[in-house]
Length: 468
Image (cartoon, rainbow, N blue to C red; front, side, top):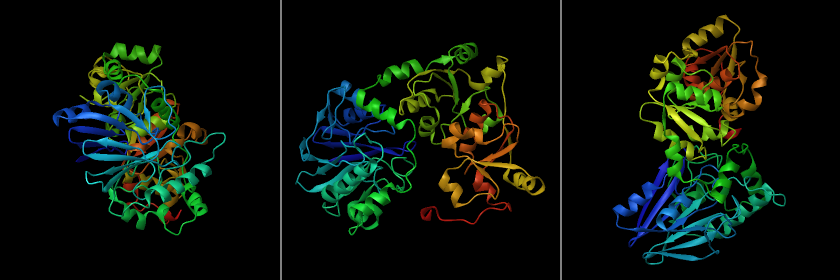
């Protein structure tokens, strides 16, 4: 028996490769599926099952493409309905994989069809659970994504309580827990940085698994402090349910080199969004007017999903050398399949063609602190609510990046703003969006709050985020 976790940091997502006696099951595959096919081929094995723990909302799974290319059976939990062929398993159903068995545990709560897959070794011993978004390390899945007219988030939270108590907590303490996500995912609120654990440890440390917890307490605690889901979640869930264009075709139409004239024509006449995915320092030094910055070196795909409202928006890319395929791939992971190409030769080619560029002013944290002492300046903090409430510069205005499209009217285009986040990535995203909307008096504070707090500028007393 072989188990391999294939973890993708940008999405904080774990896919899994399970092999026994020449047969393979893939759990929650990413959109780019060739890696799984190659791995099975290298091991002289055949992919038999594609196991989906639920209809994912935070990424587009590769299950449809993988089934078409391998003939493997897509398995969902009870009650799942789709526009493509699947096997909707029954609760307790056992799937044979080589010499091992995978038992389907119906664990509704995060979604109605959510399933946890219990792996039993060739001796019949419970070995591991692949818990999807039902159980994370340190947390459980949010129960507010599958709300219907006759079903509330409280109803789903109650189902999740029952699923955990009746299906997962009775399992032995030495059972390994392989969750679908780790820290950084918006599918929970308190996920651990660890991506593999054991059930006994979770029973001791996970707040949602307290032995003496009532259902009412569970519902209250699980729902407390959940941020609104990113706008793309419902769209990704629908793609996973209804099907989507083949990844190969998305890559073929998106990874096209464009010269400066072609690139400019698409921006001007096809209303394509210019998305600059280089580093924030490169963007500050020079960028195409009205382009939006979301760098590949940060939480790229989730921020694209949170900030670009139209999932079918035509997109053209400014990329670092050799990174066009990666950019198109990572966009497709969250369902942004309408990439039309990238600027061949990058900003060097753009400038050589005599095209206009713009820059963003930046300043060191030390110089920022000096200016704040001598002048009355406007400070804009674009970190999230918890970060701001925990500690911030006295007098700073708060406008979280995830709400910037809806709340930019709260700031004044005629004022100069010194903008910062935690480390410098999100502030440049915010500035690019604001600048494209006519806010031209923006100054980026390099290094963000991490650098600012080492100066003598006045900040509020620190409050531990877990107590907020």
